[in-house]
Length: 238
Image (cartoon, rainbow, N blue to C red; front, top):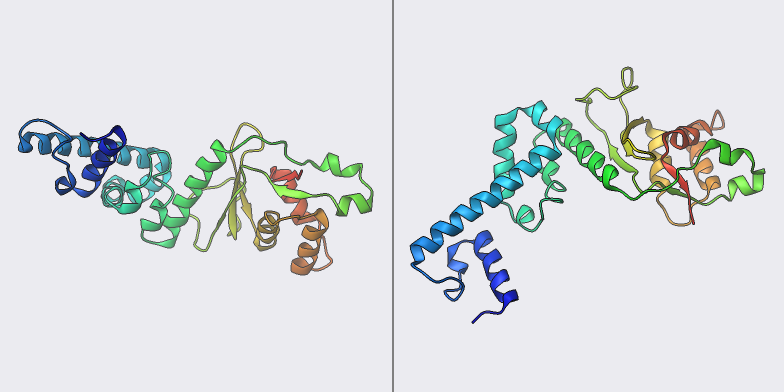
């Protein structure tokens, strides 16, 4: 007789790989009825996975149409990557199965939004906290990205209307949840570089300022940093 773990593993292998993987010890009864039951169960699992993708990527589904989204989702849930994921994480690799860059980036933004929504809480750094520091302590202030901050580089014309995104093509979209609502924040090239640098180890505010000066020159080097602080994208590390 199979142990519980062996039975569970064989059941999962049979669902994923097909009836040839079924251990005859797993079920009693005629083989054709067992296979019929397994097919019904597999169809139920695939349907749940497709529904999970539809719930995760509503804007992408609207953008490419229900029929095309359903076709891509059905192909994806049969893939090895999807089979290895639970329904909470099945959308992680789905954007890379889409066709053009704009659709991929739209789906990546939706996945980033979901990750930001589910991320840990933290108190975002504010400009008022900086006002009481002298220059030395200001430059040495340890910085890290907010736990909810997700950065999606953008290379194609945007396919969704994002607040404050009417007259520019961003280099990236930042998703972040410093309070209760997830924010979508368009970033230019310099802001994106500073945001990415904040995720490195042992970063202090002086490092971000140096990057801003390198990227933008001496003129208004603090503006990109203030933009990220205003968005709630940074925290005081440690």
